[in-house]
Length: 443
Image 1 (cartoon, rainbow, N blue to C red):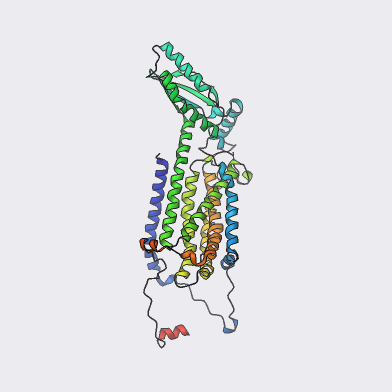
Image 2: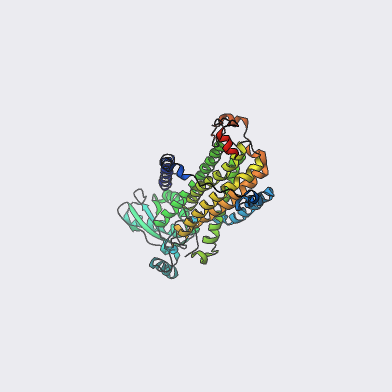
């Protein structure tokens, strides 16, 4: 099924990324060219010979050494912890929000609550049944009225129907009746009711010649949620496939893309679990001021996977490229992890904290659509940056050692060679020992 909403979102996102990449490849180098040597940092004064001491390890270096001391244990603990956090995701329910998700101080929420208390939750989201009588078997207006009443009674007997109004003739070929569910529009039972009513259409048409359609805002919301859910698997396959392919080409390794993909899936699953625990189970709702618990907005999984995929792959490239650079220039695989990972520590930490702060600001908004999406993104970025990219990734590469950079010979011939570390660049000629530059470097 096509999803115009997802198509528009995808095209807009792709356009934004394309423009950003174009700016980075054209405008940014031009601005750097204007700056010239002014971008060079000032040289630091060398300490006196007597004061020279072993430099103190940075926080990043200490963290990397801690998580790679027993790498297998780190991998098991991180994986187990994220799987536990992802456990509530089994109960994930998707729907489009209604007035019941609005803040309690708003008039729409007060009206919703009053109707629910006095008449039941279903009256806030009634279903409309449009009946086409053009092919009805009735031969007179009286017979048609009787058949419409029969159809109405058949539909009213469906489990989950609280009330069914009398059929109202719109014109010579159409009639309309209103059905009130026993549950709210976002409840899973209401979705089951819509499906059950539609399943009765074929038998009713064969018996009376009257065709019907379940519609109205509630039914439309159910259809949109179902369409988004059906698109999720295809979207996930495309995202995971791109992750594997791109990292396979860039780093020419089997372990790196598989490890990155597994880490991404763990981050997404843990984020879904956190969303269910807070917005459906009601954990810590007072802390982030959740107006009402229940199903989360249908577009959340796709937005979370898309945004988190982009950020996770950025952080993955930051970390792994630093490690790969040391290994590609003839270094030991495990030593490259200890030297390369700390170089990306500050970059990943700063980038992740900025994004978490941005998303956290939107968590404070009283909007049933924005709040769960912002919470999922803030939690997902935090988990992915610090538990996956800065902990899980170095531990895996330290654990497997040299095997982390193995690629089957057949793939080596098929895949393009993207030399991101400059291994194939010509080496500068060695300076003779008596040249001024060599003497100055020696001094």
